[in-house]
Every structure is written in C-alpha cells, then in structure tokens.
Image (cartoon, rainbow, N blue to C red; front, side, top):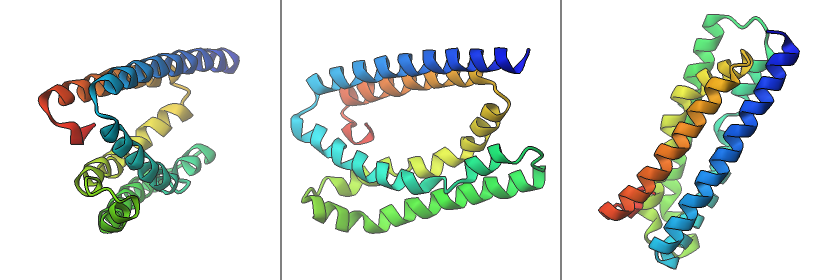
Length: 171
C-alpha cells in the first residue's frame, strides 16, 4: 500500500474512532449525569483537573522521540520503555503525596481516596503506551482505532456497572 493510501486510511480510521469515542463518552456522561448526585459529578471534575494537569508531564516527549528517530534500536526502545514506567510511577507518587493538600485546596475530603484510585492510570498507561506509539509509527491506524473503540465501550460500561454496584470511587 502506498504512503498516500496509508495516510488516507489512517485519517479515515482515526476519524471513525474519534467520532465513535465522542458519541460513547457523550452517552456515558448523559447516563451518569442522571445517575450521580451533582456533588459526585463535581468531585469527578476536580479529579479530572488534577489528572489532566499531571498528564501534561506523563510522557515527557518519549513518544515523540520514538516517532522522530527512523532507525531506533531495540536497546533504545527498552530504555525509553523503562523511562516511561519510571515517569508514571513518579507522577503517581507525587499525586499520592500531594493528595492531602489537593483535597484541602478543593475543600473536598472525598478527593483523598478517589484521587488515589484515579492516579493509578499513571502506573498502568506506560505499559502499553510504547506499543501504541510504534503502531502509529508503522501507520497501523485501523488496529489502533479498533482498540480505542473497544476501550471506550468497555470503560463506559464499567463506569455504569460500577455505579450500580456502589463503587462510585472507580468512575
């Protein structure tokens, strides 16, 4: 397949995944908005502010380095992989240590436990992030789109099921 065809296919599959993910997230938010108390929704917004801010520092350009270098060696990939995991653990620890101050700043004691659960994303994400970047580099956007769509469905379904099970802290 030519680069032009790969690019066109990549744009189409990325667009499909984006549209599908936005629709699923909209449905998830609509359902949870009806099920959750407004205060619970507010707590989730506070958590997303903290996670979003920390997420800006999570990758530290590692993904860009992998994509930039054409002939990256396995040894370099291994080093970058472990660097990503170390960065994720560091961000998790920083959030864990800062949680009491964050809860005090927002004047919301429920943030203490909920933020710890949400910050686990920084430990889990680095394990698959490099593979995602390598698939992007290889222009395997169809595969990435399918994974993103499935993850969106599973994540939304999990959030709704956990609500009914009474596990609101995992949303």
